[in-house]
Image 1 (cartoon, helix red, strand yellow):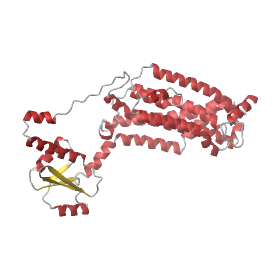
Image 2 (image 1 turned 120 degrees about the vertical axis):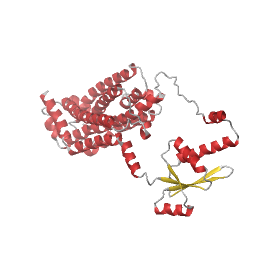
Image 3 (image 1 turned 90 degrees about the vertical axis):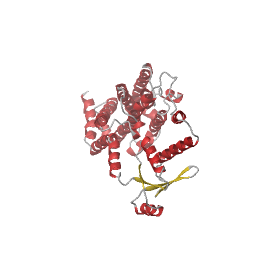
Image 4 (image 1 turned 60 degrees about the vertical axis):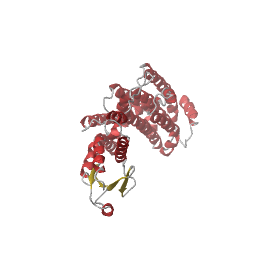
Length: 414
């Protein structure tokens, strides 16, 4: 057991002290604070440009501008409209010089018409168009001599409610609350199951190429060496994920907004259940150990670090497929293919976590998926130990999975 802890420390401590680990951790933690305070940052920049973002309105009738301004106020638009006496030629010159951003010409014929002039055609004018459409509708209603009751009925918004038949579906509000956190945690789990197992494979291959492996396995069994590596790098990953989690939680709690407006109206972060965090940690650990054993198995087959990436491609494809299913399932978590994929062990960490976060699942479903994963990890650990025992003794070019059989035979003869 003493040898196990020596290898464990050797896998954990040097990497925890590297500049790359420290810098990456600090940058990601800072990114959480930046994202949480993004609305405040945007508002600061918008406030600094507020004086220049005025829409000049040309209204020769003198009657259309008050109606237009009223409609903007009703719609709670950020557009600041100002009636101007300047000619269109002067306004166009102002746009070219940069002193004016845009201007609007209102004209009244048989119907209301408008011309929006700006330096670029990419300007967003949705709120302006909505205000003009409301003005046109009001003028048409007045022409038709509609009564006040008919006018009220005309502008009354439609009653629209969402109902679900499935018992596992959440309301739209609950989905908005969970979507953002689920999306970010899926990203973290995805990065973790790629980065840390790949680190194990590279570490094993590097020890073989430098012949350090021959010294290590003379004093400790290959199987103990494999699991010490997995435990050491896994602890490093847990530490980094805990730092990310604490940084994200602190950022959300200390943000100046409730993260439910603008961009965050789709990726809401308010009132997320604690179970979501617990399942995130659980599926991170299960996903890590599943892919870590597979990575150690593959890493033991190569003698050069240059061959690691090629041999790791099958594992990478599994992770990529799982992520594609998970991200596509954010919009339709009840899809049949998402449900089926959530019970496939190599897809479970991402896909089942998606379903747990986005749906009200009965407890037996995630527990069944966890049981399947535990059984798969146990089976893969037993098989991986057999391959690892012989794989660490193999040298020479090895870029094929066919070498697994050779490694098992060599391990049995050891």
